[in-house]
Image 1 (cartoon, rainbow, N blue to C red):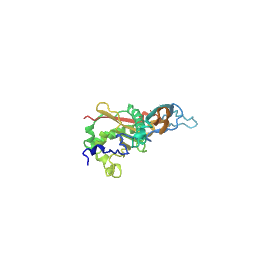
Image 2 (cartoon, one colour):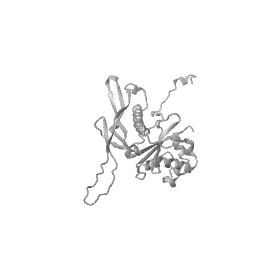
Image 3 (cartoon, one colour):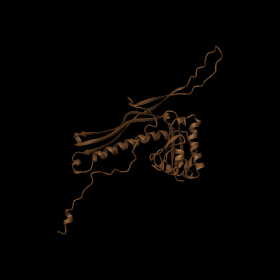
Image 4 (tube, helix red, strand yellow):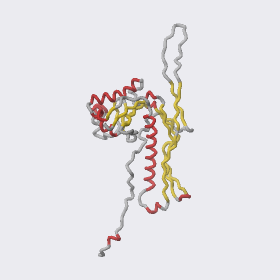
Length: 281
Protein backbone atom coordinates (compact mmCIF):
# COMPACT_ATOMS: atom_id res chain seq x y z
CA UNK A 1 0.00 0.00 0.00
CA UNK A 2 1.29 3.44 -0.87
CA UNK A 3 2.58 5.48 2.06
CA UNK A 4 0.76 8.60 0.83
CA UNK A 5 -2.66 6.97 0.44
CA UNK A 6 -4.06 9.35 3.05
CA UNK A 7 -3.70 12.16 0.49
CA UNK A 8 -6.62 10.58 -1.35
CA UNK A 9 -8.90 10.35 1.65
CA UNK A 10 -12.21 12.16 1.29
CA UNK A 11 -14.12 14.22 3.83
CA UNK A 12 -17.87 13.82 4.27
CA UNK A 13 -20.00 16.66 5.59
CA UNK A 14 -23.35 16.19 7.28
CA UNK A 15 -26.41 17.31 5.34
CA UNK A 16 -27.97 18.93 8.40
CA UNK A 17 -26.51 22.25 9.57
CA UNK A 18 -26.30 23.11 13.28
CA UNK A 19 -27.91 26.49 13.91
CA UNK A 20 -26.46 28.74 16.58
CA UNK A 21 -28.35 28.61 19.86
CA UNK A 22 -30.82 31.46 19.78
CA UNK A 23 -34.03 32.57 21.40
CA UNK A 24 -37.02 31.85 19.25
CA UNK A 25 -40.32 33.61 19.71
CA UNK A 26 -42.45 35.48 20.01
CA UNK A 27 -42.61 33.98 23.48
CA UNK A 28 -45.37 36.29 24.74
CA UNK A 29 -47.74 35.96 21.81
CA UNK A 30 -51.35 36.04 22.99
CA UNK A 31 -50.65 37.92 26.23
CA UNK A 32 -51.97 41.30 25.02
CA UNK A 33 -55.02 42.70 23.27
CA UNK A 34 -54.45 42.31 19.54
CA UNK A 35 -55.95 44.06 16.53
CA UNK A 36 -55.17 41.96 13.47
CA UNK A 37 -55.12 42.83 9.78
CA UNK A 38 -54.54 46.53 10.40
CA UNK A 39 -54.84 48.43 7.13
CA UNK A 40 -52.81 51.52 7.90
CA UNK A 41 -49.72 52.72 9.71
CA UNK A 42 -51.37 52.70 13.15
CA UNK A 43 -54.32 51.36 15.11
CA UNK A 44 -56.28 53.16 17.83
CA UNK A 45 -57.47 51.37 20.98
CA UNK A 46 -60.46 52.87 22.78
CA UNK A 47 -60.36 53.51 26.54
CA UNK A 48 -63.41 54.24 28.70
CA UNK A 49 -63.05 55.42 32.28
CA UNK A 50 -64.91 54.35 35.42
CA UNK A 51 -68.49 55.26 36.17
CA UNK A 52 -69.97 56.13 39.55
CA UNK A 53 -73.45 55.08 40.66
CA UNK A 54 -75.64 57.68 42.41
CA UNK A 55 -79.02 57.86 44.08
CA UNK A 56 -81.94 60.02 43.03
CA UNK A 57 -84.97 61.44 44.70
CA UNK A 58 -88.50 60.57 43.66
CA UNK A 59 -89.42 62.39 40.42
CA UNK A 60 -85.86 63.70 40.16
CA UNK A 61 -83.54 63.26 37.18
CA UNK A 62 -80.88 60.57 37.25
CA UNK A 63 -77.26 61.75 37.28
CA UNK A 64 -75.25 60.63 34.23
CA UNK A 65 -72.02 58.82 34.97
CA UNK A 66 -70.16 60.66 32.18
CA UNK A 67 -67.16 58.30 32.14
CA UNK A 68 -64.10 59.67 30.37
CA UNK A 69 -63.13 58.55 26.89
CA UNK A 70 -59.55 58.27 25.68
CA UNK A 71 -57.46 56.48 23.09
CA UNK A 72 -54.07 54.78 22.79
CA UNK A 73 -52.37 54.50 19.41
CA UNK A 74 -50.02 51.70 18.38
CA UNK A 75 -47.79 52.67 15.45
CA UNK A 76 -46.78 49.75 13.28
CA UNK A 77 -43.11 49.09 12.48
CA UNK A 78 -41.99 46.85 9.61
CA UNK A 79 -39.37 44.21 10.40
CA UNK A 80 -37.41 42.10 7.92
CA UNK A 81 -35.16 39.08 8.27
CA UNK A 82 -33.62 38.31 4.87
CA UNK A 83 -30.76 36.42 3.25
CA UNK A 84 -29.63 35.84 -0.35
CA UNK A 85 -28.41 32.41 -1.42
CA UNK A 86 -26.56 32.22 -4.76
CA UNK A 87 -27.88 29.52 -7.06
CA UNK A 88 -24.42 28.24 -7.95
CA UNK A 89 -23.47 28.12 -4.27
CA UNK A 90 -26.28 25.62 -3.79
CA UNK A 91 -24.37 23.23 -6.07
CA UNK A 92 -21.37 23.26 -3.77
CA UNK A 93 -22.97 22.37 -0.46
CA UNK A 94 -24.75 19.31 0.89
CA UNK A 95 -26.67 20.76 3.81
CA UNK A 96 -30.11 22.39 3.59
CA UNK A 97 -29.09 26.05 3.45
CA UNK A 98 -32.57 27.20 2.47
CA UNK A 99 -34.21 25.50 5.43
CA UNK A 100 -31.55 26.79 7.81
CA UNK A 101 -31.99 30.38 6.59
CA UNK A 102 -35.77 30.10 6.87
CA UNK A 103 -35.57 29.04 10.51
CA UNK A 104 -32.96 31.70 11.28
CA UNK A 105 -35.04 34.48 9.69
CA UNK A 106 -38.24 33.45 11.49
CA UNK A 107 -36.40 33.35 14.82
CA UNK A 108 -34.99 36.85 14.23
CA UNK A 109 -38.46 38.29 13.58
CA UNK A 110 -39.87 36.51 16.61
CA UNK A 111 -37.21 38.03 18.85
CA UNK A 112 -37.98 41.48 17.50
CA UNK A 113 -41.67 41.02 18.34
CA UNK A 114 -40.77 40.21 21.94
CA UNK A 115 -38.33 43.13 22.08
CA UNK A 116 -41.07 45.58 21.05
CA UNK A 117 -43.37 44.28 23.79
CA UNK A 118 -40.63 44.32 26.43
CA UNK A 119 -39.80 47.94 25.58
CA UNK A 120 -43.45 48.87 26.15
CA UNK A 121 -43.64 46.96 29.45
CA UNK A 122 -40.43 48.38 30.87
CA UNK A 123 -41.52 51.96 30.16
CA UNK A 124 -44.27 51.90 32.80
CA UNK A 125 -43.88 54.23 35.77
CA UNK A 126 -45.51 51.82 38.25
CA UNK A 127 -42.51 50.48 40.11
CA UNK A 128 -42.34 48.13 43.09
CA UNK A 129 -39.63 48.42 45.75
CA UNK A 130 -36.27 47.46 44.22
CA UNK A 131 -34.72 44.19 45.39
CA UNK A 132 -31.41 42.34 45.31
CA UNK A 133 -31.21 38.93 43.67
CA UNK A 134 -30.00 37.40 46.92
CA UNK A 135 -33.29 38.34 48.62
CA UNK A 136 -35.22 36.14 46.18
CA UNK A 137 -33.41 33.03 47.42
CA UNK A 138 -33.77 33.82 51.12
CA UNK A 139 -36.56 32.63 53.40
CA UNK A 140 -39.90 31.67 51.88
CA UNK A 141 -41.68 34.36 53.87
CA UNK A 142 -39.40 37.09 52.57
CA UNK A 143 -39.75 35.97 48.96
CA UNK A 144 -43.51 35.67 49.24
CA UNK A 145 -43.68 39.19 50.67
CA UNK A 146 -41.60 40.56 47.76
CA UNK A 147 -43.82 39.10 45.07
CA UNK A 148 -47.13 39.57 46.87
CA UNK A 149 -46.25 43.27 47.19
CA UNK A 150 -45.38 43.39 43.49
CA UNK A 151 -48.61 41.72 42.34
CA UNK A 152 -50.61 43.38 45.10
CA UNK A 153 -49.85 46.80 43.64
CA UNK A 154 -51.87 45.78 40.60
CA UNK A 155 -54.75 44.57 42.76
CA UNK A 156 -54.72 47.83 44.71
CA UNK A 157 -55.50 49.62 41.44
CA UNK A 158 -58.49 47.29 40.88
CA UNK A 159 -56.73 45.17 38.26
CA UNK A 160 -58.27 41.69 38.35
CA UNK A 161 -55.95 39.09 39.86
CA UNK A 162 -58.43 36.26 39.41
CA UNK A 163 -59.43 36.27 35.74
CA UNK A 164 -56.39 34.35 34.44
CA UNK A 165 -55.26 37.26 32.27
CA UNK A 166 -52.22 38.39 34.25
CA UNK A 167 -48.67 37.68 32.99
CA UNK A 168 -45.17 38.14 34.41
CA UNK A 169 -41.69 37.97 32.87
CA UNK A 170 -38.43 37.49 34.77
CA UNK A 171 -34.83 36.93 33.74
CA UNK A 172 -33.46 33.40 33.85
CA UNK A 173 -31.23 34.47 36.75
CA UNK A 174 -34.30 35.40 38.79
CA UNK A 175 -36.09 32.24 37.64
CA UNK A 176 -33.26 30.07 38.99
CA UNK A 177 -33.68 31.69 42.40
CA UNK A 178 -37.46 31.37 42.30
CA UNK A 179 -37.11 27.62 41.75
CA UNK A 180 -35.57 27.37 45.23
CA UNK A 181 -38.72 28.81 46.81
CA UNK A 182 -41.29 26.23 47.96
CA UNK A 183 -44.30 28.40 47.15
CA UNK A 184 -43.13 28.74 43.56
CA UNK A 185 -41.62 25.31 42.94
CA UNK A 186 -43.87 22.85 44.75
CA UNK A 187 -46.95 21.34 43.10
CA UNK A 188 -49.03 22.07 46.21
CA UNK A 189 -48.81 25.77 45.34
CA UNK A 190 -48.61 25.96 41.55
CA UNK A 191 -50.24 22.79 40.24
CA UNK A 192 -49.29 19.32 39.13
CA UNK A 193 -45.61 18.54 39.70
CA UNK A 194 -43.93 21.21 37.58
CA UNK A 195 -40.43 20.18 38.68
CA UNK A 196 -41.02 16.54 37.79
CA UNK A 197 -41.49 17.58 34.19
CA UNK A 198 -39.97 20.81 32.94
CA UNK A 199 -38.81 23.26 35.62
CA UNK A 200 -38.26 25.89 32.92
CA UNK A 201 -41.87 25.93 31.70
CA UNK A 202 -44.29 28.68 32.66
CA UNK A 203 -46.42 28.29 35.77
CA UNK A 204 -49.32 30.02 37.47
CA UNK A 205 -48.49 31.66 40.81
CA UNK A 206 -50.16 34.47 42.72
CA UNK A 207 -52.73 34.83 39.97
CA UNK A 208 -50.13 35.46 37.26
CA UNK A 209 -48.62 33.22 34.56
CA UNK A 210 -44.85 33.43 35.06
CA UNK A 211 -42.20 32.83 32.40
CA UNK A 212 -38.50 33.54 32.12
CA UNK A 213 -37.15 35.52 29.18
CA UNK A 214 -33.53 36.08 28.13
CA UNK A 215 -34.33 39.31 26.30
CA UNK A 216 -35.19 41.55 29.26
CA UNK A 217 -33.11 44.74 29.22
CA UNK A 218 -29.98 44.62 31.38
CA UNK A 219 -28.79 48.00 32.67
CA UNK A 220 -25.51 47.59 34.51
CA UNK A 221 -26.35 44.67 36.80
CA UNK A 222 -30.08 45.32 37.07
CA UNK A 223 -33.19 44.55 35.05
CA UNK A 224 -36.93 44.65 35.56
CA UNK A 225 -39.44 41.98 36.34
CA UNK A 226 -42.55 42.98 34.39
CA UNK A 227 -46.16 42.06 35.14
CA UNK A 228 -49.11 43.11 33.03
CA UNK A 229 -52.77 42.44 32.47
CA UNK A 230 -53.93 41.30 29.04
CA UNK A 231 -56.09 44.40 28.51
CA UNK A 232 -53.36 46.82 29.61
CA UNK A 233 -51.27 46.49 26.44
CA UNK A 234 -52.38 46.60 22.81
CA UNK A 235 -50.73 45.06 19.76
CA UNK A 236 -51.49 46.12 16.23
CA UNK A 237 -50.71 43.65 13.45
CA UNK A 238 -50.51 44.73 9.85
CA UNK A 239 -48.83 41.51 8.75
CA UNK A 240 -48.35 38.41 10.84
CA UNK A 241 -44.94 36.76 10.80
CA UNK A 242 -44.51 35.05 7.45
CA UNK A 243 -41.68 33.75 5.27
CA UNK A 244 -41.23 33.58 1.49
CA UNK A 245 -38.63 32.22 -0.92
CA UNK A 246 -38.35 34.11 -4.21
CA UNK A 247 -35.93 34.02 -7.17
CA UNK A 248 -33.92 37.19 -7.85
CA UNK A 249 -32.71 36.92 -11.48
CA UNK A 250 -30.33 39.89 -11.42
CA UNK A 251 -28.46 38.30 -8.53
CA UNK A 252 -28.86 34.72 -9.82
CA UNK A 253 -29.96 33.90 -6.29
CA UNK A 254 -32.97 33.22 -4.15
CA UNK A 255 -34.07 35.57 -1.40
CA UNK A 256 -35.24 34.13 1.91
CA UNK A 257 -37.49 36.73 3.50
CA UNK A 258 -39.27 36.68 6.85
CA UNK A 259 -41.21 39.81 7.74
CA UNK A 260 -43.91 41.26 9.93
CA UNK A 261 -45.54 44.61 10.62
CA UNK A 262 -46.46 45.16 14.27
CA UNK A 263 -46.69 47.80 16.98
CA UNK A 264 -47.34 47.86 20.72
CA UNK A 265 -48.83 50.50 22.98
CA UNK A 266 -49.70 50.77 26.68
CA UNK A 267 -53.49 51.06 26.83
CA UNK A 268 -53.88 51.44 30.60
CA UNK A 269 -50.84 52.00 32.81
CA UNK A 270 -52.76 50.80 35.86
CA UNK A 271 -52.50 47.27 34.48
CA UNK A 272 -48.70 47.26 34.41
CA UNK A 273 -46.12 46.87 37.18
CA UNK A 274 -42.34 46.54 37.17
CA UNK A 275 -39.83 45.46 39.83
CA UNK A 276 -36.14 46.27 39.51
CA UNK A 277 -33.80 43.47 40.60
CA UNK A 278 -30.06 43.97 41.11
CA UNK A 279 -28.67 40.68 39.83
CA UNK A 280 -25.16 41.57 40.95
CA UNK A 281 -25.92 41.32 44.67
